[in-house]
Length: 236
Image: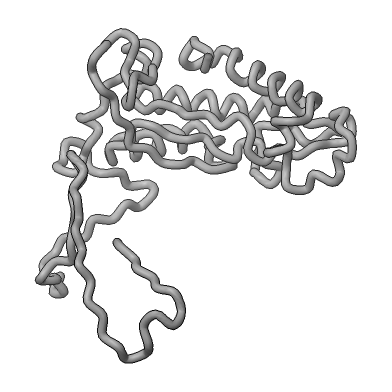
């Protein structure tokens, strides 16, 4: 969409103005205009809904899992090359991702639900998920154990559930993008000055405060070097 604005007083109310508009199309970018005809009669259309516990029928036309290259990670590390991504073991071939967010407690489903979620996303053609807000104190559960007086202990049950989910995603060709700091809350024994004033978490302050940088490195090390028992590899 294109929006035009003028300064107050340049065009009076009721006046007509003409505009010469030239649109230059960038290569590979489509310029779309409003359609001349809009379909309003949807009688006879087939509903295309996604109930949580009913994934797209396997092998049906909407089943896009066939487009995924399984398992995730089979082609080595992902690299940024110029303006695109490539896998280390397949140089010269551009890689694209169709991704969704998985937020807070949704990152830690029961094993049975993790299988359903991974299968559903695969059949919808998703090949990457972003694991977001895992460290939030309001997440149920949170990957951080907030039951004590510091935020430096990982929640073992949450880590196991995340491990299993990542394993299920991986076997279906779905990659994981893991946020390392989103809404972590400071606690009494974290060694942070005025920790109780950081109501909105540590983001922002963590790039300038040495102690917060230490805590961030410690968390990243624990999360990224931990070997997933279901995939037999660490996120790193």
